[in-house]
Image 1 (cartoon, rainbow, N blue to C red):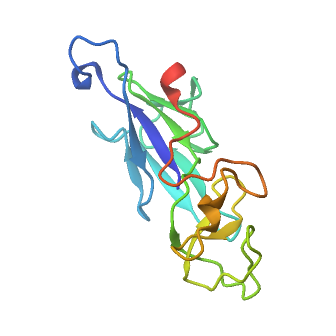
Image 2: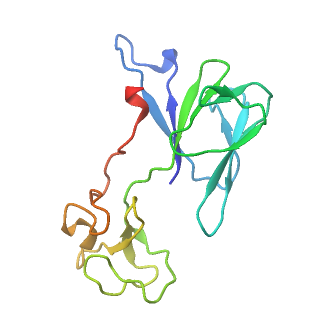
Length: 174
């Protein structure tokens, strides 16, 4: 699921620390997401769904109030890509991310021939499974068939096969 890393303001940071602090703003809404979320919105994020995946659009509501990767958003609209920096006039900034975490959920595929990448047996639609967040290949993940967590990495792409893991990329080092 796409999300934004929102930097905490100076007033929100723990006292007596050098922590910059980032909060995650999940982008799971079907409606426009106002930005920045702490003040009156100067921009919104809009989701455009397609069979090939979601596109996220940044739409500036006030001309000149939003910058994308350090450049003013003169056109008023842009398609976002992973790790784009969105900044606002008040010094607020956030980063857009398409990275997702592995989670057990009902298998969304309607392909009757879908097979688990680990055990190669069929995965029934709506049965508990995990899609690798990197290559999107499906695995069983039940008490009887813990195929996703059976090995330490995805059989197809080598990504860590953990549940409730952590994001590989964060803006902390920037």
